[in-house]
Length: 225
Image (cartoon, rainbow, N blue to C red; front, side):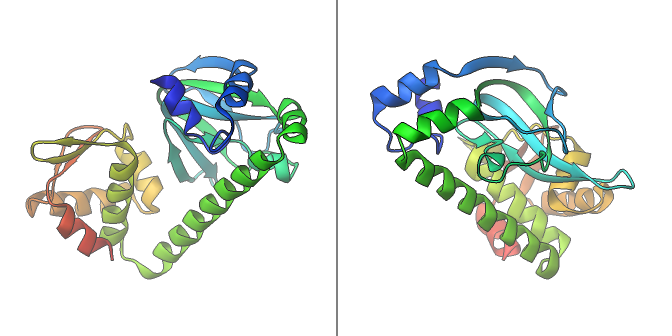
């Protein structure tokens, strides 16, 4: 099952299965716990990571100490590949949200691999383009959407990637604290909690600690528009 998850990462999409497994075998497995920091913003970038299990958050911190959560990555996703095409310091800090297993690959090893498998570079570029599109959408949401709309959209996005169908709807174990969820939406914890409380009162969601059950996806989708 974990092999299937890893092979779904953009690095391996449409790669010959035998070649993909050979590349996986050359990667180093690591296990990390919630709160561990894989790298800090501004550090030298020399490797990428593929997530086998667990969740990783990518965030940036302003000069006054405020943190903005750029994204939450889960199984089958990868991060740290940006510097492969644009060498330079890390643009974000990667922190473990839920205990995770990862595969790491040094950029020098990947470049050598790309020389014999150049089509892999196209898949990496597609992954970067997808990430850029998501970033543009997030910027547009900050400008044009109100906070409840952004909360609804964030819940739907998390449900698409981490949701599990249950009798009442979709249960999303996002593993984020209230503060982290607020950082993901780009708002204060108080205003995000107010939006969630309103959704719960309307019967659209039910909160369960670091998880939420989406009870009325249609209403949330309309609110997210």
